[in-house]
Length: 307
Image (spheres, rainbow, N blue to C red):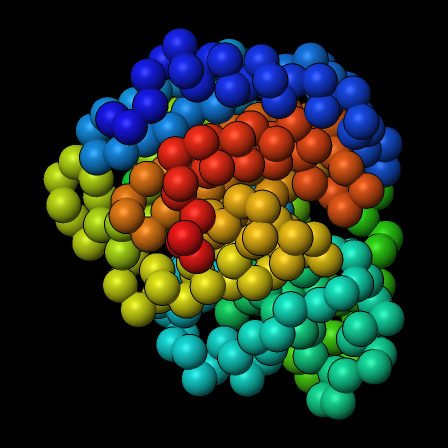
């Protein structure tokens, strides 16, 4: 491994003060209860793992799940069907924007990483609502190599009770034939998807699969087709950090996807996976300390894909 545990610990300590510049989101009460001092990072390459901090603490994927649902939808329906409903372009708007939907013609989400796009993607996963939930959970378990991974029902219930904006996005898309069917059933799937719980070790393993062209880092099994893994990494670079993706690409240069739990998933094309948790978020909805520690690792070891 290119980094020793004590080196990673030192970089994490250097990044830790940046959490003070962030805030715990208050629009989902269950997330607002998270410990603001929680901080963990895991880097995985093949079968080697380097961990520091709260690497075993479990947290919900939130929007980091969007890359997983996108992979599954593409595997189910193919590129033509998926991208007929969801665009491929970055947005300068926040992740939960409805304005962009109103301005687009046709009125489809700009990309799969914003909330509207992710909801549309989840609608394309094959199966009934119950089958979608089971397949998403099974897919996460397979990618993370842990069949005990579960959904945090408390978080899911909290999100459901505060889902008015996502409902508005969904009804708007339904009115423009982007999505179809029962909105509450679809949102239940989407919310349960976001409420799947992992730790940093499991998140890093998922990142190593995506980064390594979709191959399991241990068995060598092809869990995601290489073409789809490439699409996912491209979206992570261009849209994974919402309207801060450009700055993140310049400063860090590693395909990544954030979640409002403070999760940060990194997938380097050479098969290095990153799993980070630090709940305080910056103004863009990304982990303040998580971004900084990944920036420190990237710059110290020249990991930017643009280097």
